[in-house]
Amino acid sequence: MKITAVKVFVCSPGRNYVTVRVETDEGISGLGDATLNGREKSVVSYLCDHVAPCLIGRDASRIEDTWQYLYRGVYWRRGPVTMVSIGAIDLALWDIKAKVAGLPLYQLLGGKCRDHVRAYCHAFGDDAPRLVEATQAAMDEGFTAVRLQSGLRGLEENYGVADKGKRYEPADAALPREMVWDTPIYLNQMPRVFETVRTAVGEDVALLHDVHHRLSPMEAARLGKDLEPFRPFWMEDPLPCEDQDALSLVRTHTTTPIAVGEVFNSIHDCNRLIANQQLDYLRVAVSHGGGITALRRMASLADLHHVRMACHGPSDVSPVAMAASVHFDLSVPNFGIQEFMGYPPEVRDVFACSHELKKGFLYAGDTPGLGVEFREDAVERYPYKRAFLPVTRLRDGTLWDW
Ligand code: CS2
Ligand code: MG
Image (cartoon, rainbow, N blue to C red):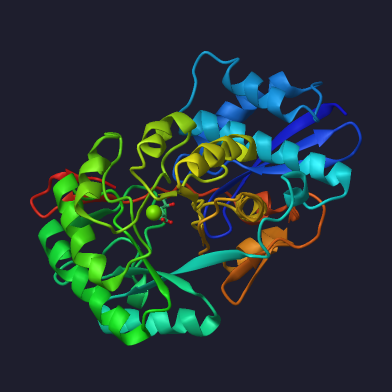
């Protein structure tokens, strides 16, 4: 079975998605997600100019060899653009292989390790009482795990809080918007927010929180300690984690579990963190990390060191990568939890999916392959829109971590 075409589509049903279709001479094609929020066109060029021409005529069944060819065979390795491109091709080839076998992808990955995938959703509020309402609403829908992001007193906007007309943090502006951040206010307020929500909703629901890389190691240690009484499921991305040793300082001071990795794109970004047990959950997205082939290697390494997988699943990961995450989550022994923000109707109109969310849990469905259909006319119906994520500054104008 030979690859005859690698097609790349960019559409914007509310936000930009880069979708890859690998076609074969036997009429079976596979889908991959190559979306890199705010950098979509770089990926399109990488795929169209540097990947697609090399794949025509190659055997579509040779998934590992193609991965090695695109990674090891290339002088410039790693980096988000390269790895999401490899990831998209990898997903498409797994999709093809599973369609040929007539099986949902998880069957080729060893079959189900669990019946369904526990998902967490996002709750946000301008203040703690609104966050209580949002958390309760999520629990009423059946979610057993909820991520809490709160507005901060004196700050107009905060990451992840789309309350009362404010924006989540999507790449929604043709030039980057600017947001203001204040660490002392955050460190004082966040534990109180957790206390209010935990007291209101009881101890059975898992409560998560995303710090979005904004603290120093000592500040993160303090936050972890201050949150401990309210039993957070995890504290996500407490630090900018290029400095792989910094997390060990955080861990010395707190038992609050740590989740990192949504900006990682290779096993080399996390192998020391995993081996040194500096994290509890690894958040690499199945697309950004180089596909199913690469994620399985990370999961095996993580499993040796008591680290669980928790693939990144924001709305800027398309339903194609979300489907791949669900198949992956069903099949790896060390699954932790799956982020699921859901998609608006425009996105569901472009991507028809067999996976579904029912009462806070994800199910893959039985459709052969990844179980996603992509409508190519989306490119005309929802054309690409240039869009940047915002930048963050301290009150005095100092540019801050994102
Ligand atoms: C977030 C993301 O889902 C998450 O945990 O950190 O929303 C992230 O901000 C975006 O994916 C950025 O592209
Ligand atoms: Mg995050």
